[in-house]
Image (cartoon, rainbow, N blue to C red; front, side):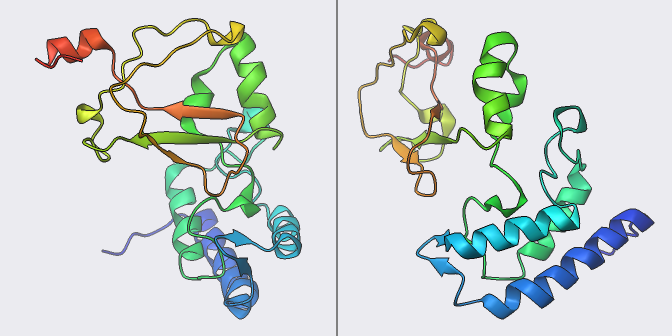
Length: 194
């Protein structure tokens, strides 16, 4: 299916395509160290993305980003997906990887987690799977009923298992971990006992 793009998105696509063809594809096989960009290459590509106006495309304008919509971001990622010069997870050349739940934070939590993430001072990862749940959130047994105030450093998570898979291979020292969990009361409504 062919979508007729508005002129500004056609220009964006063409610009990103030139960037991929001229600057990323030529460094395939030389850019990565495992699943991370080599630091000198990441610094050069980050500077280039800033020059091209691709820095923080997904961050709302009111927070200092480009505020690019879903279609525009899809175009950028579709073009970047044409090369193997970038890691398969956490591509930082467009800016810090900001998890969607951070945008819903307010007050002190927003200042403590969202704003430093936007500035690239904090990184996060997520814990998603359990042995018998896989990536099915409905099968998760982790209970957060004892959750308390995270600002005071008081929280507890209880589960029948401690075998959560924490996805932070590209974030070796996260300052926040997003955990998919279930409230016991919700589980009981679904006919499950935790």
